[in-house]
Image (cartoon, rainbow, N blue to C red; front, side, top):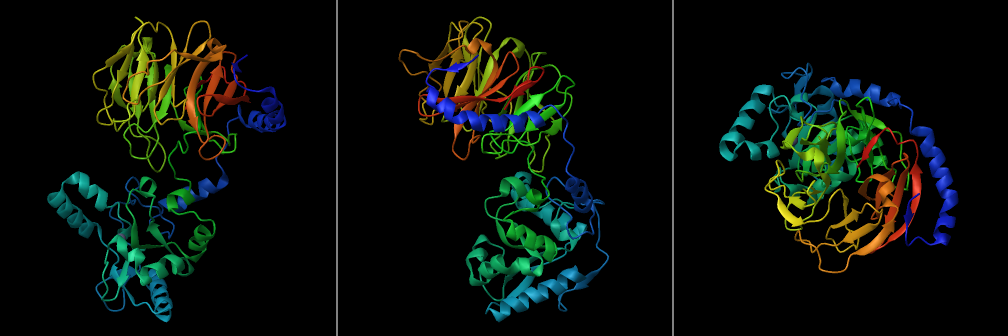
Length: 475
Ligand SMILES: [Zn+2]
């Protein structure tokens, strides 16, 4: 049995009743395979049908067929701008609503064919290079404008055309507040680049019909990706991941109030895993997985904004099976998370990740750590990652860092006992609500514990699951 040294009995007793409830709910869901909700089946159909007003097109979801042309395009108000018939009617109603409120708006861009998008994209590639072109423009077949459902709008004769400041003009503010009443959403809202793939575009309206637009507005769901649950597979830094003996990889989504929702299968072929870690390896705002394999390889699965992962990249080619590693931002001056590990000879090494891809040259940062397990966490809450080191006696020692890949010179504080029964442990963020910090720990007898962290101390611990023995658990 684990103990956190500083957990007062009163705290434990107070929490006991809640634990029983959470545990009962959790255990009911844990071992069973959960079926996808019926809504997901429905949405899969409509979001892939190119003529459907709910079709979801983004940088990882092209139109199918790639050269799709809507069958009911019409000229908007005798201009050269084309829109689908229903969209042209809806945008005229929106414009007359705006006019009644004192704002004169017009269509700046509507339907763009595959060929038009091709030349636009190629122009950007030639002018700015491909990396930047991909940030500001869609590849042909990947643009919403090809659906005939997207409309770029602007103030008549006004400034801020196709720029973010349109959102601050009176007309832009009216659009943001009222577009849903006419069946439109602002498709690329501010702060959701990591989900939509696009920076804020207050002028780019997308017709989805009044029902969906009003539903999204009233439930405050900002993007289509979120509405249709096409979100990253690992949504929160408190989710727990587990690979089972068949190689299925499961995500147990944290509900942010100290429990987990129904698990979701997010991968297959995960047999032979020594340990896994969740980190935003390439700092794109989407959680990735660092996988340490019994073959000695270290690979990274980069998460996609719409769910799933890109093909893994090998970031360490051999010898990793004998290391005990932990992953995180060990150096505050480094942009990407790296790896800290103890080698068979007892040396402790820091491997920086200089470019969000393969690891750089190791730095030796300690010795005498034979066989010791590591957990990286900001234990003292000073925004510098620390290491929790498990000795063979089960003592848990705190090695605080200076934020520059070095240890603070001080006597090592003992912060736990009995940790030799912990098979795997990882830092966790937000498990008990926004801003909460802690650790999840799986014991050798298959129980899962959550340890809440205060400043330089554990503030409590409780069991949050059982029967995890056959699973390789990480986060
Ligand atoms: Zn647009």
